[in-house]
Length: 485
Image (cartoon, rainbow, N blue to C red):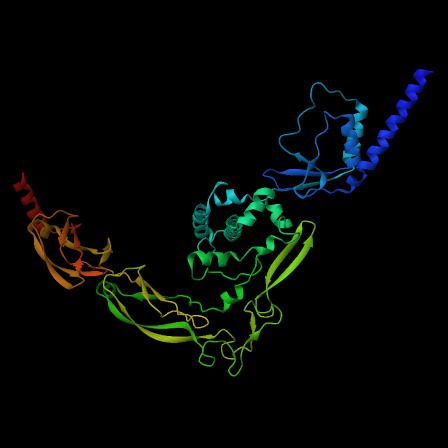
């Protein structure tokens, strides 16, 4: 009787324990797994918390511990993909029934695979203990390397934006502290900033404005819209500020002697010049620009999307004003550009010694700048026509060929040779060999930039031997051959 009573009260005590556990762990069933950014790929599993906790009570040694997410919400279990989970300790035993029950409980959850975020320290190539000077030095080098105006490779612009974002976070003490503690997910969720958006992605500045603050001048693509999550506070100002005009190219073909001694050329260049009607403003005469009512003069429109991970902002160029922040009636002559294409005659002095591929720069003769900016430059690319007799080599030297009969090669002679200075007498020495090269000093091309220095002219001697000779010539050659013996 005592044994039956003990078994009865033991069963009642076990049921009471289960009821207490159910009541205590019931609120945890509503916990949801958050995306936790780690250097490796992770698998976030949302499970039935009560079932998992009950299973852990029965198999405490085998069950993995429940972790707590950065926001303090329990119930997310983090499982690393690689390496696979270690086998249970040797001292534990499990039945097939318990293993099947565990698999059923795990199948109730949802599985979501996420990719790790970017490591800002690794992106800038610095250590986590790097100071402000090291961050600035790393950002300068990488920004110059991946700026879209310098690097035309695909993906360079995205890399430039990532570098700018990384530097902006690590150079700010508050954002750096949040990133070091919670990672990139902390910045997206606004942790440490009083809820959503406290230090979110919407606080990133335009990477081109950041580039200008370091190097000055125009960042080449300043004020770009559509760079998701980046602010455009100065994009409208960048579009409305005066910018330098583009350079213009002109191809010029000249003769061989004109390239040697230089010449004067008149060029008819088509280029952009300031509009006479609107004086380069692009606004119709008698009207004034007004602030855009769509973007409020910012030049960009920000669309905010609220998600469980925080507020995400997408910045796009304002379609109403085209990103200028102002609306106006365009000039009918230039169409609002402030510039029109016209032809202008320019006198150009080609220096002595130019060659094919030489480039001459004419300052301030390129396209007019926008909003009153300075004009660009005119670049003239030289192409030299070839001469049938004179061949140029090594930039300042000239080569030519003369042909003489074999008798003149034996006896010696004087021949007329064409040079850049005109026809000159050249003495052929006695017994010159076929293929011999004779030098005519200071008969070459003046050196570009230093016309007092000139090259030389090399004359190659070509000896002709007749295929047929007369009987008299044959007798003379035979006589000469006997004398040679």
